[in-house]
Amino acid sequence: MDYLRELRHELPDLPPCTLQESQFPFPLPTFPTGLEGTDQGAKPIEPTPLSHYFFLAEVSLRRLLNRARHTASQLSPGIDSVTATHISESIHHLEDQLQQWLECLPPALQFNLPPDLLPSPHEPELVKLMRERYVEAREFLYRVFLYICLHGGDRLTHAQVIAYSAKATAGLRLSVYRIQTEKPFFRHMGSWIACRVRFNQALCLVAAARGKELGMESARYVLVPPAWRECVGAVRDRLEIWSDEGAGIPELTTLLNWLLE
Image 1 (tube, one colour):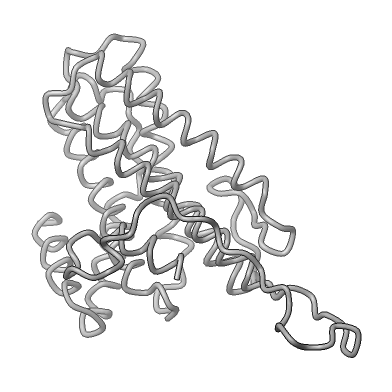
Image 2 (tube, one colour):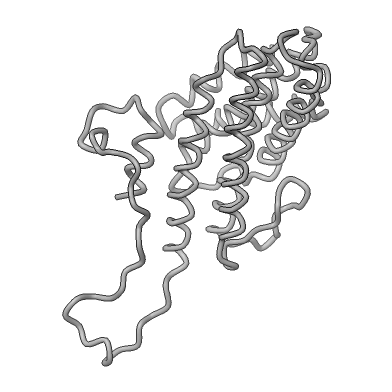
């Protein structure tokens, strides 16, 4: 239920339901302690399944992402230096929380840290999903800085441009990593949301490349990965294959086709 509540807040345009009326925050789910009325001495307690840890980590990460989206809602095309500083401080706090989340993962869910280390060739499914969710969260935090660099113009200080460009560049590296390391047609419980995530990351690559082409002053230190166009094309091709799997996916493909023309 906690997982559904978090997902309900992440997708605010869904039809009204009782979950929408629930209040935040929710307590984290707890592990089952055994069935009531059973003789615990008659049967040894089985170890906690790894899936319990996975969903605990997933729910807590969704909370962090929801807080990040709330912070990102303060962005505007006319963002100034003061607002950028305020948003940056909020994102830095969320970065610290994401690092704590990473350090709290049980050994069975730990993964090779992106983007410098490639996934293990024999990576278990839950570890793969956890790693990709981490990349999604980290990239989203850095995406805020890309937005600031593309819209700040001469309203940002030189120090801000330098600092934010480094974060924006790191986010673009994560986008390329996510696209290049993805198993293109791996079906799982979050496949539809994964289509949306990879589309957003492709948009960031396009936006960064266009910003550099237009000579935006506040984006001059942002480094666009050389493989950006190849990655955007890969996302387009994958979305096209997934187009019959869910509403809205064909439209995403059309948009990327238009942007790549």
